[in-house]
Image 1 (cartoon, rainbow, N blue to C red):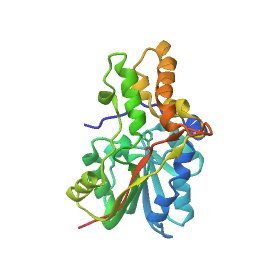
Image 2 (cartoon, rainbow, N blue to C red):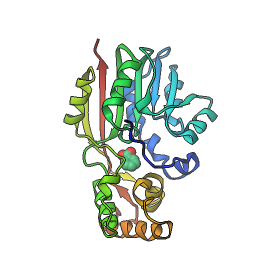
Image 3 (cartoon, rainbow, N blue to C red):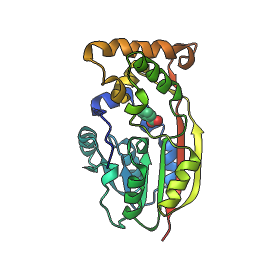
Length: 253
Ligand code: BEZ
């Protein structure tokens, strides 16, 4: 069964606090190298900033995302965007490539997503993606776990995220019928322009949303207090401990 995160996605909040996500996704578009006339599926398109770049290369792009508000924002850019969860892909041998940036770590179980990506691709089609990898936002997760632990809650049971190692995800890709062209972990310390607390609001609702509304601001503050000695630089800029898993794999057969 698909595990659906409790995070509510607001396109407006995303644009205000997380515009660095598509900006830093440029190397993944480069790895995709879209060609004029290709049919490409953007899986977990968010508000469509990168979908637009792929379309600008001359490809025909279908974009899917589980969050209706993000799909509405992508449609407002004139894109063919549809509300579909990555676990429920229903395309048959249609695409030359499937692209995904910063989305696969929200989609569990990964086997179900990979089966849908495989079916969506033409034989020989490519799957090019970047997601959170092993150790991604490790300090943030430890801090969330500490703060929720103080309240008798096990944060790890609440986590909607899946951050695999290159080896573990490589095995899943191969088991799903892909040949791996390249796969690697890329540590990417990431400045958070709106600060850590805004980041927690945008991305960590599955954790803090479990608390009574009256306790959420205090808990968020406690997380920030634990983290500032390790994640804030000497200029007062929050820099999150992002680690990416980037890969290019080919549908064999
Ligand atoms: C990520 O893109 O790595 C990420 C985003 C939100 C929460 C956790 C990880």
